[in-house]
Length: 354
Ligand code: PLP
Image (cartoon, rainbow, N blue to C red; front, side, top):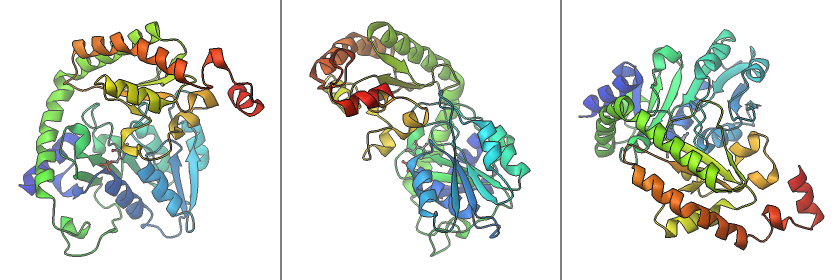
């Protein structure tokens, strides 16, 4: 059953079965990929990543700062990595470049193939965190040319507790976990068969979702976006002008704190997240939105709406029906952060000016 699941995952990402390892999820796969990616050429001591990587990439690289120089690629104001800046950072000392395929907060799609070419031209290895992209846009690891790619089951309606790491044939491998040599010796420990088998099945369904539902999901997302922009004041859609995942809508309600909106919507039966759900226990000031160069009053009020093939037009209409009142109420409650109630304190005024 494990081998069948491996084939199903490999099939969805365009890989050979033997190049897919099962892990506990995206976090472990990202950590493992970075460990492997820096293990190849000991003379190279630099890691390059984008400013908007998931914490499981960001924090892992920061933890390596005593032995490696960690460099961050800028994003444009739309949230896409600046490829010219990447070229200026990658050189003969670069061991690994890690750029996500799509951002978990904004859904913005990154030019991974071009970024991978930049890395390879300098002899560096390339990893992509494709957790958000899988099942939403086609992912073919061989076409992309990446050395490592990360996936997580629960983002494609699988069961929590399973993930995968793709590694290209011949790329350096170095285990994080030692023991009974399961998963070709690269990830010891008894396999989580239940979640892995469900992951394989989810991949089969994800292919169907990709072919049959993605257009409809994007239409619903666009309807939600237009409805929000038309009915609420002081809103900014993050990444509106660039390629985004079809299911993600990231909206900044300026001058507000996202937590208040999340709770108010939750009371109405609508589940959204401020920032990204998978980093929801950390600070609510969004690193991703900050990296897009936005002002202080935009950093806290970003809400992510996620849709799927299960989302209906009725649900979108319901959200659009209640949202203006929810936002109005939040603006009344907000002590400082509304345009009508701009703070008198010099500190906050200065921050808002910025
Ligand atoms: N990478 C991205 C882009 C994510 O959105 C997430 C969130 O779940 C992860 C990695 C972590 O994956 P997991 O929750 O399976 O550890």
